Length: 114
Image 1 (cartoon, rainbow, N blue to C red):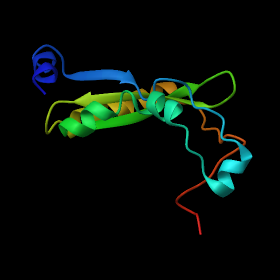
Image 2 (image 1 turned 120 degrees about the horizontal axis):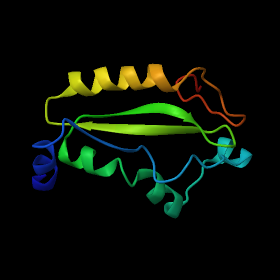
Image 3 (image 1 turned 30 degrees about the horizontal axis):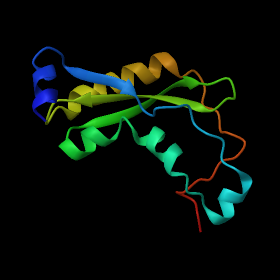
């Protein structure tokens, strides 16, 4: 926490990629049985661990797509209790970066799962 608070003396937010790699393709078998790949999980979670463990507000914003049409995100990390700052910045970035939203060919909507 000390290192982050030292950084926040000089900046309002810390910006990182959301993940350490672009989104991997989901194999069709994973939709039925799930998938566990610890190496890929480590790359995917590399940048989101610190704000979660430190209790810092953070948000991920879509900023575009890779060559395969899979989403790329940017994570904005704020000072303690600075949710309003990161929400305003996230809204501005999303408005600038995402002109249209695409759904990958292999997509599982967890909000509509039965």
